[in-house]
Image (tube, rainbow, N blue to C red; front, side, top):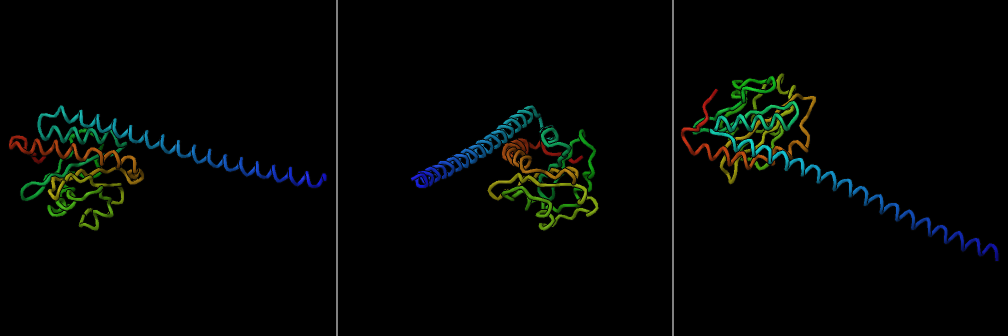
Length: 211
């Protein structure tokens, strides 16, 4: 009789243990989901804050040069130790804009102009995603290997519906590769920046002047 009662008790204990383990697993999954949701919300909020601030800075621009200076400045503030160059297509060529203020660039404007052809600038501007260095090289980028190995670099397209406007080249030291969260911020500003550039390009008086 005692042996039977012990078996019943042991069976009950095992069931309780199994139930507790399942509950613990459910709680663990729920906690992980909550942490992931919080992280995702924080990322979206940071992106929204950056985009709002970025667009506000563009609204103060009085011309295309001023607009591009503001855009490069906004990227420098948002992406640690990064710099940017804006490539804009012209009728038969392209222009490169690099703001005068900011970090010390490993590349000068005249060097960038030799890395790209108009055809490559046009192709990159019509991509529907951010282009990595590997993708740019496959598309025809001709940057010196000695410089390319020292920087992490991406291109943010500024095109729509098959019409290329240009792109923003963002780069920083290779030991600080651009992260997914930072690329998400950069992608979020492309539409507004493209529209702002287009509004100034409609006026001949505001056309980009090479520096």
